[in-house]
Amino acid sequence: MAATVEQRLAREAAVLRARLEAERAALEQEHARYRDLFELAPDAYLVTDGDGMIIEANRAASRLFDVRHRFLVAKPLASFVAVGERRAFRRDLIELKRTHGIQELRYELKPRTGSRRFVEVAVAYGFEGERVAFRWVIRDVTDRRQVELELRLLADELAARVGSRTAVLAQAKSQLELVVGQIPGGVVIV
Image 1 (cartoon, rainbow, N blue to C red):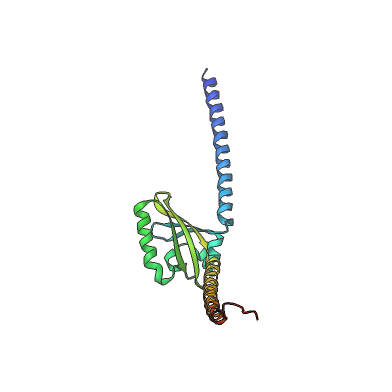
Image 2 (cartoon, rainbow, N blue to C red):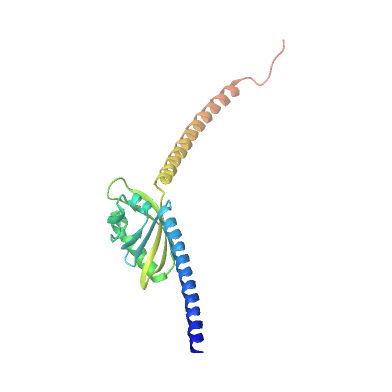
């Protein structure tokens, strides 16, 4: 009888080991899938600690900041924010820690090399293990912003042209009314 209890326990242990191994394999597969999504995303994805120190970054973040991945991790995100906006950035971090929410923000970035970039940011409060962490999605909107600026300039130029043309037409109308006013009102037949 002792052998049958031991055999039953051994079978149950084997079944549990098989289930555990299957769950571990499924978790590894899911982790790999999410890792691929993280790495291949077109927008910059970052994970920072509560002070804004970069813990994880995807390829798009490396391109946006123009820094190799291995040099990006362990850098403060604030170092890529334009100097004039760093105070606001730090204030936003404090607010995120206080509210534990999700915020949508805008910043001007200054990569190590290259020109400034304008970005829209969605950032969420969370945890990495037991540490406070933020998850960032950063979208480069520099080109869109440039197009919007050009459209505003064109709209202003068009408005100025319309105003100028309207003034010319108003003047021509006044002159025409003067000429018409000098024409006699009737026709005399002889």
